[in-house]
Length: 628
Image 1 (cartoon, rainbow, N blue to C red):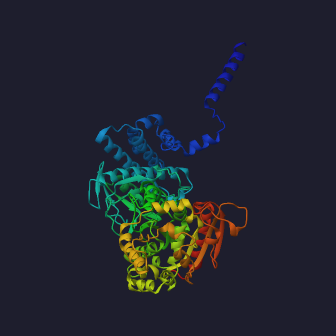
Image 2 (tube, one colour):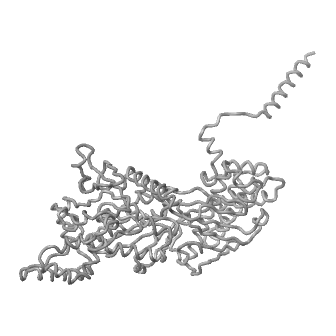
């Protein structure tokens, strides 16, 4: 009788114990754990993702062991059947990435080759997952796993492109080839504008961090975002125009084959170079996906390596590494179907003055589709009249080089934007002189007028000009159209006295001025008058600036003013930005006038950039019906 209760208790305990072992337990997941589980992987956390760990568990493999020694696990997973190919290929791609990043492929040349081969296999299996598994890429558009695998592909292609870029310094052929593992990889960059140049360096855009740029603009997609340094040796560029020497590029690794088996088995691949400004998508078979692109990194790297900050000061003073002629810099490879925005900086400045303006325009997708940016870099110590002539010539030479017939979209309906003294030059470019400047300069004695008539061939090109015929919009920012009293104060006069003009200008005009002084009855032995420099021209009393301010802007040109005032208080008419007064910047007849509380470098403020974007978007809307 006593045995039955004991037996009953034993059976109850046995059942409870068995049930406890089979029980599924549940707990709370924190937001951080949620993201780590869904998004964490070998790239972000240095451990295999939850997706791969689950796939390995299905195969009876340990994720920790496979992370440390991936190759045997890759072989086991490859042989396992049945298994969905999406699971298999994505897991194998991540384990090859573990091999390349955390595995120990060895050191020295053999280690580098093993690492290259591992990255190639990452790209191969990610490519197979994206294009040749059960579902097409668009069907997985919102899945975290596809985003992870896309990143594996992009990172692996990035590393391969950098390695092949190093190899290219040892080769001269445009169609360079390389054997990586057992796969023959051709490099195809024939569509890129710089294809005939050997890169000095290939840099991962994702590895660059910039100070001084408010935003980094990029496009998510497939492919490795790169910057290619193709600077020419110093002194090798004699033309007025320059392409930005650090263009952006996107690398895409394409494997031969049109099925999963053929892609996995192929021994041929092509590393394609794409211009992200032109190419927005890439296709494999019937699938088209967005092409990744970075629109900031190339520009930022160029400015960081340019030395503009010191060179612009040297140019103002006319010493050291000073420039003596204007240069036109193309911010991207020339595109005949994008209109041109021409940027002109101010005194003692350079393309660095436009750092956030240019970056924000390039980063705006609609503006980027419609415009390309050309920056004028000119010697700011030279008289304004001389710069006006030289910039016109440099711009005409550049436009003729790229569009000899003048029929391209790029050659019409240009927009000019000038800051400070660059605004004065921008206004001259959209104005016609008639005889106004000539009459102003030659007024005086009959002997003086006769002298200028005799030397009309020397002075005429600087005093007679017409508005550029292909500009229909202009923006003047903090521009002293009527000069500024600041240019006459003791500090400015002392700086003016330190300026040394380029020798060619002194040689050409210095003797003429001395002759003019003699012909006009100058005292014997008196020092010949000095050539005026840019600071002299900026004085409100300067004859040239006064005459230039009276020139009418071409009727075809719609123009705008962005004007800064240093203090918000007080009458607008009495305000200034610390250097330029309102009465000098204001232009009657402007389509718009934006007042911003700021110092003289107002062009870099968010408010000014937003105003420029508004003007440019309105320009697109207005011209939509008349542009092809």
